[in-house]
Amino acid sequence: MYINTVRFAAWLEFALLFGCAQSKPQAVIHPVRTIAPAAQAEQNSSLPTFPIGTMRNVRENESVKVYGMNRYVDPSDRRVLHERHAIYRVEQQPRWVTQSDRNENGILLGPILGLRNPQYAPEPLPGEAARDIVRTKQGLQDANLDIHTIQQNQEKLATTVQSLAEQTLDAQRKLANVPAGGVVIRKGE
Image 1 (cartoon, helix red, strand yellow):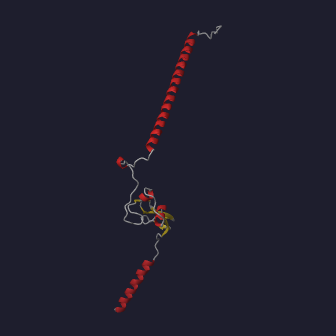
Image 2: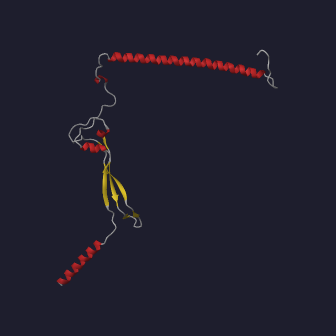
Image 3: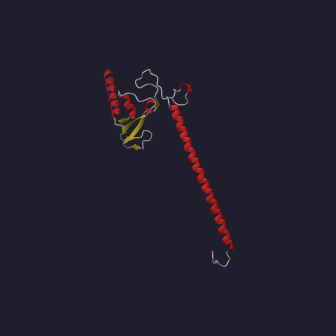
């Protein structure tokens, strides 16, 4: 009885191993390379950090990995065979930078944007206010000269339009005096 049990167990193991050993088409995935943004490559180096307020200090780009696929049968439809191709997978989504480069406990501060309280503005340098006033006066004088030039051009245009209107009326009067039969030529005109 013991020998029969051992034979049965041996045949069972043989059948299980033979059944598992049959080759089935499988997809083989070969990682080709990782496309990492330049920001991450530079962040890993020992170079100094980027200036505050640059995009690299505010947001990280995504990381994409490329996988090469061999020929395989589609698991959802056995009638479809996929030929060798590449698959791109996003490994890391873009995200906001909330910690310093070296995970220090420093506070990340960006540039000061928006409205500022005027009482905190630095005092102007000596002569800076006078220089600004002179620039403003010069700008106003230039603007006044431009406005004067535009006004003169408008006056010239108005006189030209008026003389053209008078010439048009004179031509219409002359055409009204022409007889219906043809052109009359008068001496002295």
